[in-house]
Image 1 (cartoon, helix red, strand yellow):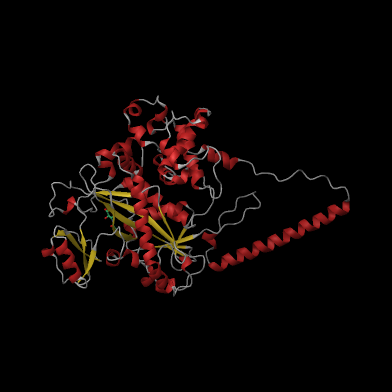
Image 2 (image 1 turned 60 degrees about the vertical axis):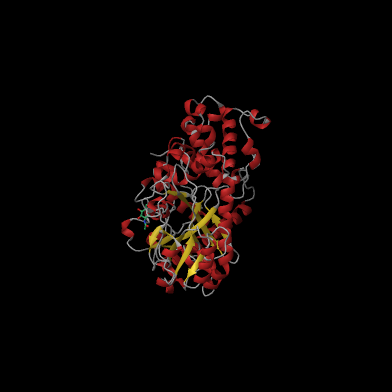
Length: 529
Ligand SMILES: *[C@@H]1O[C@H](CO)[C@@H](O)[C@H](O)[C@H]1NC(C)=O
């Protein structure tokens, strides 16, 4: 089902603008003649240019794939070369990169391989060893989804033993055995986990049970008294993208995150049952957690907004938590930048690289944030949970937009699949005001003004409008909003429809809803304010 198309179709059907006034008729035949000559000369130059361009494309050997059918009767359109993606990974046929393929397809890429004149390489494995030769001769326009040396960030040992107030204390074994034993003596009640780079070793142990001669491993403090929701421990995965080193530029996906719950209740605690404290592949998803289910399912919030709403309603401060998470991520990149620069030195330019990883965090009862690990090539497979499709496709789509490999072409939304439409903007992206929507009055009726934007209360036509507003905001580039009026984050947090707000009360019904929606989005993230 295609959930929105009319405004776009209208846009596409719109007539081409005409420039200037109609030309006055020429009076002197001499002037007309010279004009004809100029036009003819221009025509010849353009034709020559076209031939030259075509020739260049033929040299790439990709003419069949690379030239898009030119729109007939629409002069002035350039022939656009279809960009090419090369996807590399073991056993691709098993489908774990399905959503990566889907997104590249939707943004107009053709599939190539290492011998094509490719534009983007998406490699599941770290490519700087297996594909070293190709990586040493990158052309300026080619983009690779890894950074040389990113192991400095994702390597478990290297990460755990770096100084970062958000990383639980860890010791290299056997090198720091002495310091470890001393620390353990001073903190006799601490429990430990012993890990290696190669596996997620995990079982909790007392000091006496650890193998302190295991070369290449490390021991790390176990974060006990975890923050629980409905009795379950969980972790939070934050999709983080490095777009540049020297100078550093790092972004996180702000709209969504991965929440994985342990499959057994934490209490009564038993160190022998790792399902109580370790998140495995068979984790419990958000929609099976009673306190989040309603927000996610019925009220149509996404994972992150449902989680934040839960925290805020319990009297915690979700904004502080995300500020700490951001701070932990910042520290990691600042500490590792020099190593990354070193690893990139032998390449022509670091501008060929970008990399998205997933930072996994745990929380304790006081909502302190602990960085547990950083995953290179995070799992993007919805094989186990089909419902994760939306999140994974939005993760990949936002990443590709950020690193400028999506092309600014208009798309025919009437042709797009439901998954594609949702990837761009879904019902979950437009949900606002979770506390109000969960209140008894909004659950039972849409009468009150506070309830008007709750998912069950919003009309289909208003949903389309909100989705367009969402897309405009995402794509606004250098444009800034004038109406609805902009606001501060503080203002949005205190705002209610009965607030004395002359701007709001002066508006008509639909404008009120639009204004209120931006207030709701501004509460979720200040970029909307
Ligand atoms: C990715 O996650 C799913 C769901 O938890 C799991 O079934 C699958 O085995 C994971 N894939 C990989 C490659 O780890």
